[in-house]
Image (cartoon, rainbow, N blue to C red):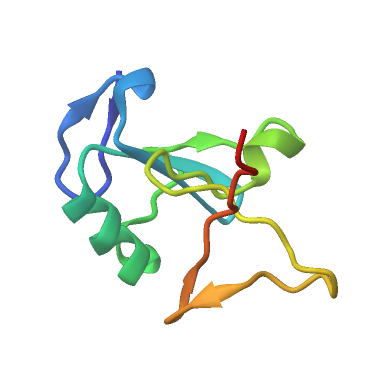
Length: 93
């Protein structure tokens, strides 16, 4: 069992609301409030003893369960809308 670094709640890694990688450690968060708090001040909440170390290249990417995947445009830049990443659009069937 892991602990949310913001509120201290025990959480199952497979049921975490989000996970954030900070300085090669993965932190599991229980809700959007804790996710926002951690994202705003990771140095305040980050403690390698609470998270799990990154094991491979797949783990090194930031991952949030509730964000759409983003594709770079033709120049390799990530498109944005109002400062947020624009989700990729699926082709109509």
